[in-house]
Length: 153
Length: 153
DNA sequence: GCTTAATTGCAACTCGTTTGCAACATCGGC
DNA sequence: GCCGATGTTGCAAACGAGTTGCAATTAAGC
Ligand SMILES: [Mn+2]
Ligand SMILES: [Mn+2]
Ligand SMILES: [Zn+2]
Ligand SMILES: [Zn+2]
Image (tube, rainbow over all chains, first blue to last red; front, side):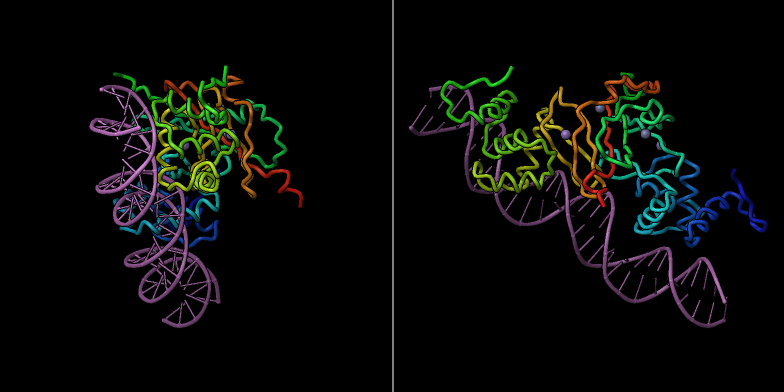
C-alpha cells in the first residue's frame, strides 16, 4: 500500500510527494515538494522557521519565502497531510500526519529534545472520560520531563 | 485548614489573598488582591485580557494597566499560586491552582465554552507511560468537542 | 502556445506578550 | 508616624510569530 511509480519519472524520491499534492488538488511546486520531502525524511516535528531554513539550504529547492512555508503548511494541515503540534512554547511545529499517525510526545524541559511516543494511552487503554455530554471528542496530550542526557550531572 | 483571621482586619474576603501574598513574600497591592479575588470567585480560566477587563471594572481596584496583569500573573504562576492553561488558540488562560488543583478541560470547538474535568485520567488510572527514560514527568491534556448546546441544531 | 486560476514574494500589518525606565507604593526599621 | 530601601506600577516602545493585500509569476488544462 505505497510507492506507486509514474511510468516516466526518474526522481523516485519525489513521486510520493507529487502524488500527494495531485491527489489533494494542489499544484506541484518546488517549495511544496521540498517541504513534504523534508517531513518524509525526518520525523520532526519542525517549526515553520526550521522548515524554512532546511528547505532553503537544501539543493532541491532554491530559497523561498517564509510566508510561502506558512501558506503551504496551512494548506497541508487543512488536507490532513501534516499534523500540527503545539508544545506551548510560542511556536507551532509540524510533522507528517494523517489518519493513522495519531501519537503524542515527551519533551525535555532542559534541552527541548522531542521524542515521539508510539502509542496513544487515551485510545489504547480506553481511559474513562468523564461523561461530559460533548460529542466528537478529540484530545491533545503531551508529556514533559528531563531526558537521560540532561540528568547526567 | 483555612480562613486564618487577622486580628484587626475588617475585610474578611481579602484575608486569604493577603495571606497568600504575604506568605509568598510579595507586597500586597490592589491589583494583586483584585486578581486573586477574581480567580477565587470564578473558576475561569481567564485570559489576561479578560482578567484586566474584570479587574478594571470591579469597584475594588481602580483601573490598572494590562502590563501589570501580565506581571502579576507571571509572579503568581512562578509561585504556583495559579495555573496556566494553553488551549492553543493564541492566548493563554489562568485559573487558581497549586499542588492539588491538577485537572484538565474540555473545550467546545464552536462556542469555545470551557468545562473543567474533575479527575485526571493520567493519574487516576496509572496509564502505562511507555518507558521513555525521562524523569520528573508531567503532562498536559485537553479535550476538544462539540458541547450539548451547540449540537442542538 | 495561450488562458486562467493558483501560487509566490515582498512589505506592511496584527496582536499577544515583553522590556526599559522613571514615578510610585509598600514595608520594615526607627 | 516618618524614612529609606526595595519592589511594583504605568507608559511607551519593542518584540516575534503569524497574517494579509497586492502585483508579479507559474502550473495546469485546452
Ligand atoms: Mn511525533
Ligand atoms: Mn479548570
Ligand atoms: Zn492520543
Ligand atoms: Zn492530568
